[in-house]
Image (tube, rainbow, N blue to C red; front, side, top):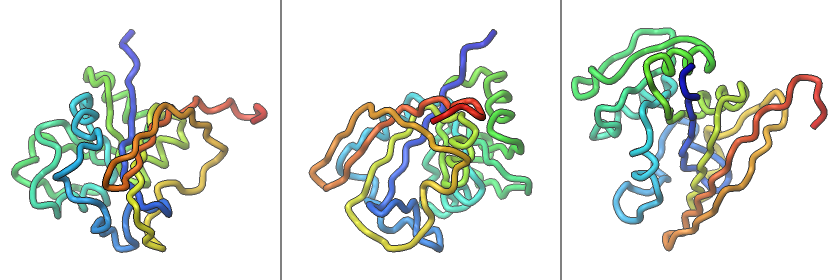
Length: 186
């Protein structure tokens, strides 16, 4: 029997809870240089990424491919455009979160970074997200793509830690509690 696969999300949001503007723009997020908010350390522990197609298309617009050679699984039912610098590491996959994780575990993947609003929501709803790090950027943008959408039931979180930074960013880590069986009281 293989070791269990761990799943984590590490996201930046506006104080009003948006991952991106309505058009997908991320211009309110701070630039990569400057303060270390723990992302580099987190990313060094990740074996592969699972992202949604919209997140993938947004990342394609970045000046540089941000994931190095780590495997990037893009959840999509349509073929992908593969940038030359990432073609060897990007793969399209279909299936619900349990199927995707089963396939990755069979390859020896042990820690998956889950990214993108719809993808994070799907893993949460399936009870398959273990860790959630949310960094709030000190800005209100008023409208956009929310980090959390409608869920089939409450999802309990256990606070692990909170760090604040001189720039005003506040990063909070949570462990995601397992979903209660259907019909169980909350």
